[in-house]
Image 1 (tube, each protein chain N blue to C red):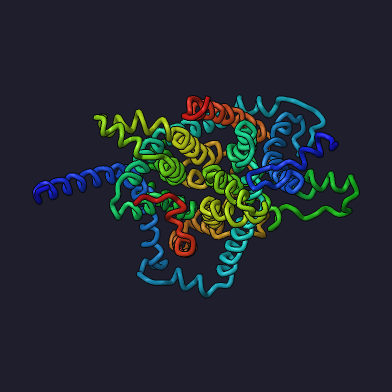
Image 2: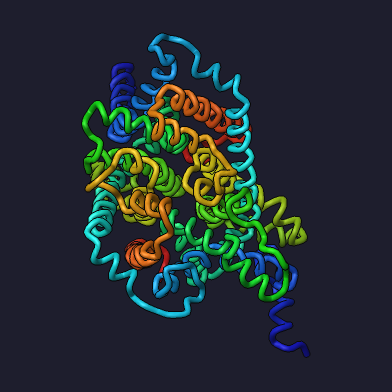
Length: 280
Length: 292
């Protein structure tokens, strides 16, 4: 009689009826890729508590001096605040207009819808550097450089395609007949959308909003050109700091950013997953 | 039904269609104002030489100079290699995650999303720490006696590729995972039930069904790579010069919008060419879930 572990190896692992033994390589490869994905982020966290100014891992002495540096720096705090505000405003701009566009394009059977979709995803196709110098040049004439409005507009355009694609994909796998049923029973289209469709594509919409947040929060190149001095985003300040010298304060800042964004991710998971149809 | 009614109904339907179409108007306005008009403006600028006359000088210079050709070759080479690396690493991972029980898959997705949520700059910085001459890999490798002289992992193409693949991987895994989750497991069960060997069921049933997600991911990764700036700037050590880095230098140091714009326009044209080819070959509009 085989031992339980060997038994597990011989059992079918997927619907293709392949055994676990037959694809142990897949588990090792996937595990290695997960390590590859996670390691750099995880190295940054202990490094932020290092007492040394030089790169050491694991650190020989521990301290919170880089955190003191960060929280006591008006420049860094200001940059953090600018980034958070810009990212939240970008989410507020992008999520509704991307949802509206995805819904409109999915329901409308106008021929031009395909072309409009292509237009809406151009920000993803145009190299960011070209957008950056274009926006910089245009903003110089409109006096929008160094303004929150300018930053949010640029980030919203950059974030739109990803959100749109995710929400459109969600709508595609959604059976629009459900909304038709509601409407045939007398619900206005907006009500039918809000009550029937939106809850079911909620996960896509929330993912779209998260992506918009990430795109804005992580954006460097456009900010490098259009936001300066007191409107500098945190990534811009970090890039300039990295260019000059490697300052472990960046490790401390990134640790704080990881904590904030992980919290946001957990919140989104809770919102997106609870009460999903077909689940207990 | 009378002809009058039919016409009325048709008009109603058309009105509704256009109203729904109008829902995309705010998004379209944003894209036109922030992307189309400024980039069009740059295109216009690129057509004038330093003396302010209409000319193709900016483009002629690009063809004449070997250094510009080299920059474009480097850009394409780096983008292709990064995309290939992402497929090699990302497909098995997405396949693995798509078959895990929901709770474990969510945990695995956290691993994919954790770097996604970490600033690109921090990850680039972290890779510098790991890969450089006195970095972690060289420290550990030499302590263990695996190699004697430090490996050249950073400040060159190797470092650029590792860093870029790390940054691009989530962009490939996310759409691919979504596409794999959407595949009806009954198809694979049917294949197995009808006697297909595991490898055959995968190759003939699962893999083709996962292709739309894979193409979506590959397209996103490749196009994002073409315009990459931060990672090659830091991890390339000046040896890997991508088009976007040249453009930044031209504007930042020399305020030369004409030449920078011309470079940008050519980069855009090449990008669109790639996308058009992908569209023709792979029916990209269906992949990306376009309307109509």
